[in-house]
Length: 169
Image (cartoon, rainbow, N blue to C red; front, side):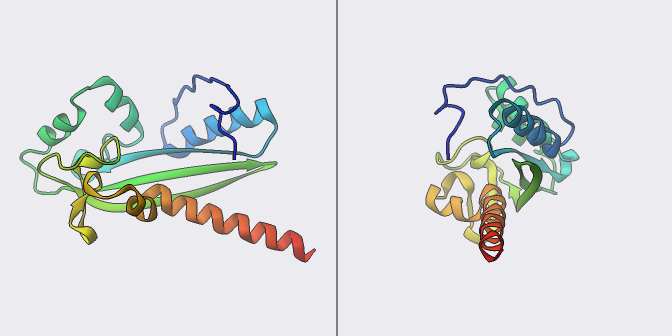
C-alpha cells in the first residue's frame, strides 16, 4: 500500500460533509481522480449520546480548535449520568466502483483523562470489556478492537472474497 506521503502528494482536503461517509467519499474521490489507482480513505469520529452525537463528524475540528478538548468534553458532561459514546469509522474504497465499510465500538466517556497511549479522544473513551480507556490500552490490542480495526477487517474480507471470485472465473 502506498500513502499520499509516500508519493509526496499534499492535498488539503476540505471535510465539508455532514457525515463521516460524505467526508470519506470526498477524500477518496479526489485521490482516485488524481491517481487513477485503487484508493482507500476514511473518516472517523467520537459520538456522545448526551451531547446529541457531538463532536461526531466534527471530532477532528473540535480537537484542532481546542487545545484542551478533552477537558472541555469532560466539563460538558460534568452533570450528566448518561456517558454512553461510540467511535465510528467509515472506509471508502474506490476501484472503478465505490465500496463502503463501517466499524463501531461502544463505550462510555470516563470521568477523568486516563492513559497516554493512542491519540485523540482515547484517554476519555472507556472500554468496558477491558475496564480501561483506549488511552490505557496497548496499541497492539487497540488495533484489534477499535472502530478502524472493525472497518478494516470488513475491507480485508471483501478483498479476499473479490480475489477468490476472480480466481474462480
